[in-house]
Length: 318
Image (cartoon, rainbow, N blue to C red; front, side):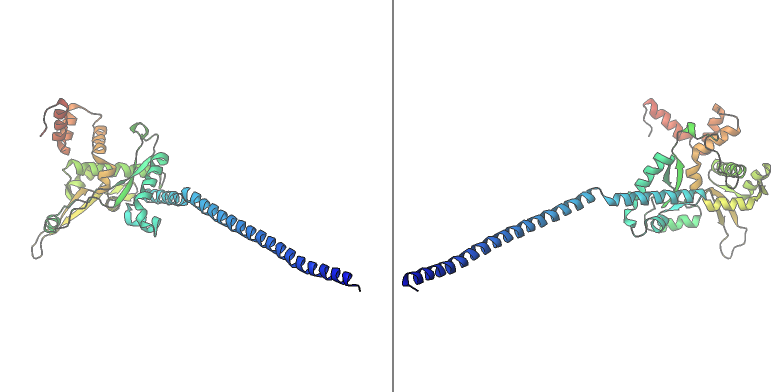
């Protein structure tokens, strides 16, 4: 081979060897940059998707899924209250925590407020706390004076009361319950209203002999409808309409036990002074000046009424 051709071949070979690695390296670098850019884009896209996921979680939290759980607990509390009221069983705070709230006992106030809202807007009722049972015997009063414990401000027990206007509380609109029967329920309602009124008109203390005399005049000393009077009084005592207090003589002293009847927490809240006054007006054929004067005097609200009248005139009450 001539030297010129050999030289040209060597140049082509060297040129190809020099050019091919450079081209390959350039292509590889371009591919690496492309892969790096795509990886960076993928990383950015991943960060964006995570941020969007967190934003979605925050949005779902803003919707407050716990709110739906609270509403369900409130509905459960409403059902529990209705079932207790049906049997005239006090709705106790401990029972609400045990049967309704479970392990969410700290949310009592929030769930109670939601249940109150549902009861008022849908059922026309509300949960009202019963008053604390009064100290009646001398022993109970002495024990309360000796103890340094602060008096309870609430009983922790509730009942359902109507919040409907008076015009919608008539018997034609709100009849007695059908269980056991409308007639039996109406008789029981009238009987415990009468007994509570008699006790309240006797300065909240009626002896057992006097109560029996009143019942004998009404021909209710033995039976109330188809039930024994004794059983009806025990049911009233169990449901909180009345309180039966027994004073026994001290140990070593002779004497008979003294039984007195008092108005119970449910009687005070469900019937109240307005119910007693309405019952008396219905029995005596309507209000009159003489009846109202005697009624207020018997119930011990005469001074309160006079004080209210003086206050309305602008004079100083105290």
